Image (cartoon, rainbow, N blue to C red; front, side, top):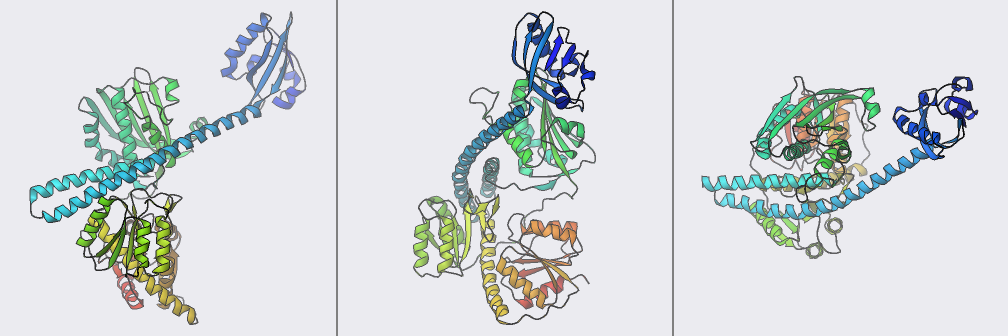
Length: 627
């Protein structure tokens, strides 16, 4: 309760002031209650006092009063004036308002999640059909290139067309990543090198009338980010700037090191204190008023005329930056331009350098492969590619037809099936039933949209092999050989595990050499670990590169034996990372191919071709051990 005169001087309070705010009665009497107000509430409170002075009663007026400890409490007032004083009763509604704001935030988050789910379903369907079309184009172009070998002009045109297919594939990947239907592929990158590499593309995209200046600070830190997504974000921002400048002006791109301190973090709940790499995109365009800035990251919000923008560009940037653990801030003034500043967390690791793919020729084979694909054109193209590689190919238009062929008793070495097909029998169930009827069959999935049948939590299910569309002839050949060889190794592992179960295990002798075994197939990993123990090595195990890297950081490892077809981070990228960070470690590549990855330093490396036994493993280890 409060009594005050019309000059805002407090004349009487009740004990609740001490309980709620911490002020004693002596500290309040004679003091102006305006001194305790939150600065943002001063103007509104003065207006309300003015009404009371005119004899108007106040109902449910809210403002914030400062506590003795510096915090603020929100009070809802009812006040009645008489000839000399204001008599007011206040109710503390701080928790109520915070709960209401939390509810509003939850509702906003739910609406955004529903929008994202709708976008995800849309982009997933579009990407699936689009990638099927790209696969038909790419497959036939590669077959045509073989027919026209020696015709330099024709081969150049085919190469240009395949480059277009590759760009289309990247676009579909970006759509899937935005719809949260594709796991991101973060790498340790130097943003300065990345934006310099985009310079020519940016200039072509935004036009010659816009001056582009790129500023990269010296000693720029690295950051862990998906390069494709940061390129897409930068392109989106550049296009927005071009439109804001009506095709003429100056675009400035700056990359530098930044530190977010406690003061800034207190003003922005979504950012943590720490070291960041900043990327700022500034333009000399029309700028935006504050009410527009508040909405620009909302999906479907656009300041552009109808038909000129989707309203997804900045929300894609925002979603990507938040998923990366970063922060984004917009500074804009009407008539002067806009700056969008992205903060990406610093990485202390060395930069991941892109290495050209292996120059070795691909291998085919003579095994029998059953292709299950509902798209007639895609099926015909894949069959041609596989037959060109020497395989015997059976074909089915859906999962039910494929299961009928499997049940016919025809010997089949591999099921190569699309993930998304019509009909009651789904591909994942087809694969399970195929394994029941033919335990030795290898299974390889393919899709332009992985769906949730084989992907959960943004990662492939354990033991699942996937070849994403569109793929090249070489990628198809390498993946098929790997999966077939892996299945043969499973057979070797299964027979070995039976022997180990049947015979008592000898006491393991402590070896002087430690081997880290990285293999996603549990049965192969178990059998290979047993072989390593038999050869008197100490063994550490991991099912993926992501599991292996922390082990390498905390343990003394002499040799890494790794499968090249790992889920998540590929075996080839894992090997390059190991060689760069721990050059003293020997590397053994377990693969069905005739060669391993290309490394800048190929010393102490060996190829272990699947399927293999103890003697082949012994020879590979002997070749790489660091004496």
